[in-house]
Length: 234
Image 1 (cartoon, rainbow, N blue to C red):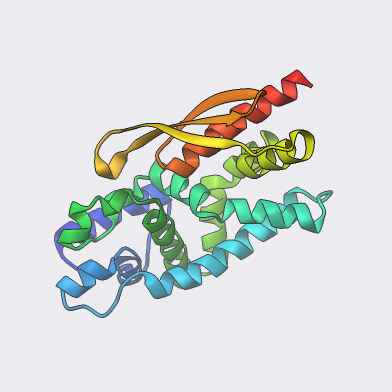
Image 2 (cartoon, helix red, strand yellow):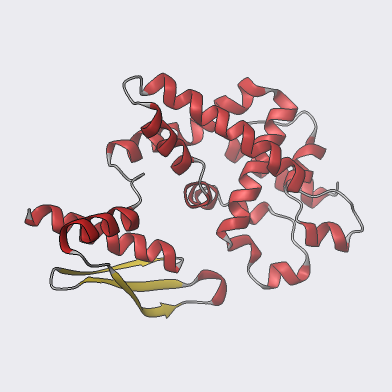
């Protein structure tokens, strides 16, 4: 580990609120396959991501069971799925600026790898695994709850976990016999940091627009607005 990597890990530790006893494990968690290939190193984040996904699922499951005792298994399962999803975890990783700490090969770096939602989610999971291996389950749970326990509560309170696209489709099919139509109106920004503007149209009923860093997130934003409007018109 060189001086720059050591300093970078110190910065990440400050963001996490956790100091690693063995920094080699977090270095592995931050290493992309492209970087490992360039450095002729056979270790990268992928095996840790596999472990981190399981640890994170257990932490979120326990948290939901403890906090939401009146919720049935079906709703708890839906909530857990949302809070361990790529969409949710990549937002947490973006807020932490986790992308700045990923070790990427030249090609992956040039293509904006540190901004990719799928990679941010994977690296977040691998970092969770690194904390688990270094400090144990209690340490991992403490860090995770500190970072997004309040976000879980907020999203549940605001019903953010509801898949707005699926809900809108169910309502329009059931009540109006039609399907929502989504149209991309605009794409702006550099390739690695695009902003999409999408319009959703339910024939004869409602038209709304939404923006997002991916087409899918923009569609969800537009669908959420459409759901709200339909609810207000009932």
